[in-house]
Amino acid sequence: MKNLIRFLAIGMLVFSMAIIVGVVQASRLTSGSSSNSSQTSANPAQAPTPTPQVIDVIEASLAGEDAVAAAGFNETFTSTPNLVDFQGKVAYQVSMQGGYIAYVDAVSGILLYNPFTGDATATITSDEALQVASQYLNDNSINGWGAVLYQQLPVYEVGFQNGDIVLVNPHGQVVYVQQANASSSKELTSNNDH
Image (cartoon, rainbow, N blue to C red; front, side, top):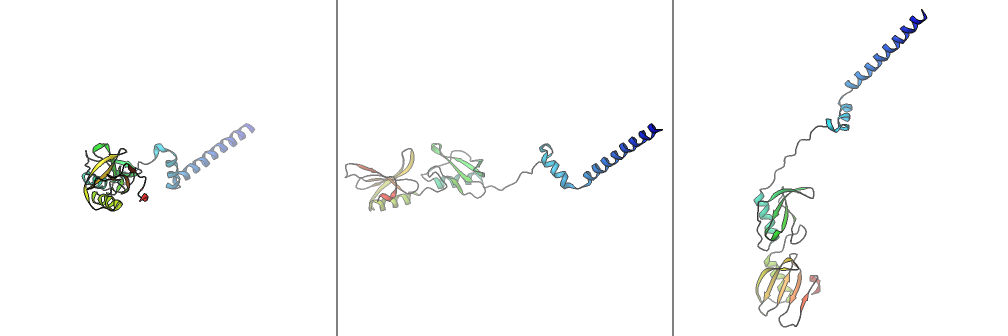
């Protein structure tokens, strides 16, 4: 008889434990989506797939035109600009003649990187370069201008009727002066020298 009572007591204990475990499991399943979402985020295999974000971008040809206009030096883009990630922004990569590459924001069309200035600054125009050179020498007798390479970077070369030559970088700074009547030329590091 003692064994029978012991057997029934153990059976009732196991039965009670099963009911308690069942109630706990049921309460977890019905407790809401907050505990379910925490389990989902903890398991990346069950994480929901993010919906791709759709953005409107400007036309590739417009990005190319914006880039070459900012680059100056009568540049042209050599192929259709490609969409890329540039410093976390959707941008067009614009390849130009001479292997130069510019980046233009694909949404706003704003220049992000100009290869001639090394930043997002537009290159000065040829008219601005002529004005800088003329003011630097205090001479308005400009004979002509052209784009040349100076230290492997494009600059404006401005010639004067007396034979003087002034090189102006894309930022509008005079970087070199060759005076026709002087025995030497003068290389400058900034336009603050004059």
